[in-house]
Length: 265
Image (tube, rainbow, N blue to C red; front, side):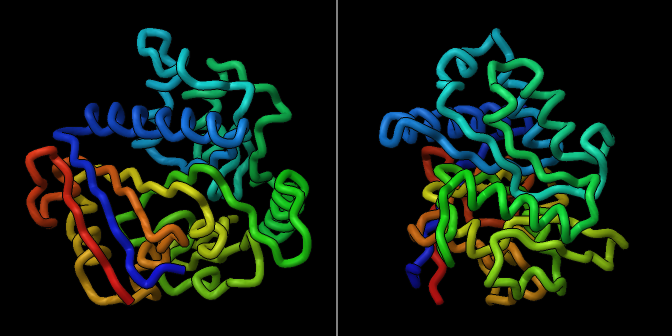
């Protein structure tokens, strides 16, 4: 894994422009992956910012839907809450309503985390699905073509929350993670799996993220406190698509509206 991380942060002026920038970025990555390998394995995250992006991908008024080779896609989730798939808090439900109900993906192309099951059983079943889908043997890790993340105002990403056990999990692909600060369980991909993805990007918007984002990118390493710092792709390249509110405490963008940062370890 590279000891140098090059971080590219395109900055959009507002939330609508952020969703548009993210949709264009995702579609470009899908086109590149399909051209290179003939299939596109994507892991997505929940939240209000991805929802806006999914609406754009499904909207016939934009050309995104027409550009995406839907038949080549296998869709996975980065994490899930322990709720049934029709629950308002379900990441799967949000994606289904915003995207899946409107695009030509077949059921066998969709790999959801079964949040209605007990946490460890859901984690075990999702790991089994990953191993079968990627045809893994032994200690092999899946390598997603594209993996999309968000970040909470506490510095968490996926369901890797501060001071929780999953931060230390390196032997599994999927962890059942107890989150005491939310009095709940989550199922999440582990950070070594996330870092294996060919393309990893964060989508972050809102003034409530500005201080913690600056701490993640510019402050000292402290993964217990800021689990987002665990995301260090093997490629040594990370993209963070931001709105101006989230980027407010970072260095100013260049003339192209992009912030370029580096971290070493």
